[in-house]
Image (cartoon, rainbow, N blue to C red; front, side):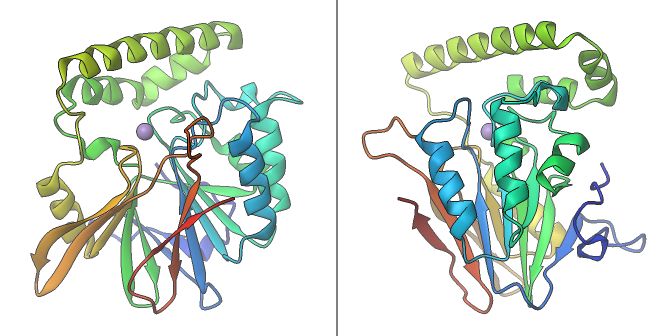
Length: 278
Ligand SMILES: [Mn+2]
């Protein structure tokens, strides 16, 4: 997928025909602070929505990357009807003019399209994408494609990410798409309960695959979400450089201690910070 062209076009480029690799975002010199969020799973204007609104109006960052599953479900940009959650979120993003905004698809909101990006004044990035901040190269991903043990999901993913499936799905009436999405959610919940009862751990990012992605992208840090297991994992070394993956937290307004976390990179600082929003 080529990125939509809403952000300054010079920021997003492909690495060129001479070397294969992911798309790249080259941070301009004025980006001192870059933030990342993912897995808000918004489906109502709850406390997470309010925290997001406060964050967007006050963040010291110059850029925000939303690495997937911002919405619990997205059935097409035409669902952002006046007064809907989608449109209210687009209003928040478009008002945050001090931020350059990027979105990546998650497994829930993979149908976010160029119409919604324009409403948000955001740019949709392919998964994965490299962010170059000074000399540092970060590989950004939602993370679902790296959970190699989740073979049922990967088969589903291959199906629903195909242009033919999406074209056919988006041609259906909105109400029908919402019905199908509800059905898929119920089935996914049921699957989760079976898995919980079995005591088997949920599929996590495959370390060898993550290393391969990093090496191919000439990056040392993978930043991803999806697993809802915030942590930093060492991934050994390559060419004398330590490799690692940094996992974003999900947001949960219902948790006993509500979770709403931003991962923050500052230019020239080796370590990312985790910021808990009030
Ligand atoms: Mn996800």
